[in-house]
Image (cartoon, rainbow, N blue to C red; front, side, top):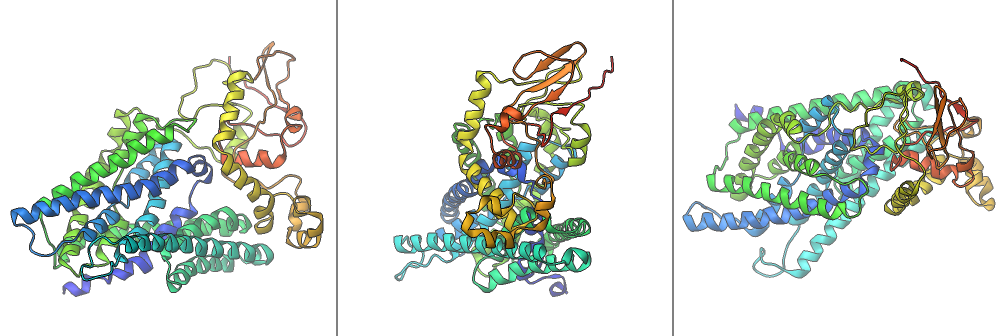
Length: 555
């Protein structure tokens, strides 16, 4: 009877996890993700490694204590403790993020938590595989061996980079197919091909010896950045809804099966000392992961990660589907059975207790909620009514009785802020400049024509790769999550008999934005770059003549 309600652990990795991970990459909000990319990478890679080794070493001490008091009935090696540290470091704050999304919590906090959870799942998978692959030479297969250690590091880097390449290449191929064919005329076929190409990424990566789940993640990010722009309107809606439904069903099935496994798994090993030690180790590992990294990251960040954000990230370190799937994959030995039982209890506790306390914690830490993220249509509709320039996303706007707000000028502080922005984001500015000038025109229907960005001797190739729609468009196609740009030009608004500009000057009775001076100092690629990044000053862009902004007078 129990066998009828028990699944092969590989079902979770081959069927249930891919749609969950792909949806995470496909639904990623690029603007906020890239604005905090450096911090997210630090938390996901360095933080997960720190958490893994701290938990592993603390649990090794717990195992030694269990051996002294006589509660250890079989072998439990140091590599087993590190493996437990790797699988339990995979965070899955699905409950917290759902509450954040419902309450419209601060977008930067949401981006930090979501980005960390997405990438650290991939890191935890590859890290656990590398620990399993650790095989020292000699009779003692669990002793430290420098050669075996560096071999495991090489395996980690090789698997991760290979999975990343496999996912990105599949996304690029899909983008090229959707661009240079007439698939957009057949939305159903286009949606089916998009789904099959995305799913095939997992199969190809597994067949090549890489990690399919990691490949699917980066395939989703690539598809969202390039392929999504080539799809028809119907296919965009269908693919979003399809993967959202698959993600919802898979996530709920895994959590349902967790409750079932608590009673149907026949080889549970309950050890109170190990369970209590695991909770303490997870708390300490999360603290060592969040607070020191946040301190060092704040040294180079313009918008600091406040203490309330750090406490919330510490509190939101839930464990979920990924930790369960990694733990159930191997339950052959006594140590792995004890890890599986402990992982189940940790997942239940963090989801029920910590997840349920998210809303009170948000109030206690004074974190903003109700921060609406308007759509592109809403921005186009309402941008003439309310304009905020250079607003710090971590600050609420000051009260103002007028129909507009000018929050930053062109003085010395503004110049310093612009230099800080350029210095802190130079590597991403280089990437986005390359992406906008070359990759976007090649893979999508947006961006400048390649005939204007490639050298003259590449003229034939540039004409072949450039979409005819680029020449037809009067302006580059805009992404849904793009920002409006106002470069260093003046912002002039008129209210009543007074005129206010961003640099403090006064003038006529007409509210307008002038971009002519800024266009002499900034190229269009840099403007689009800053719009995509969404970094620094929030700006409004006008591609043509000076823009007249009407203002409602409710007085």
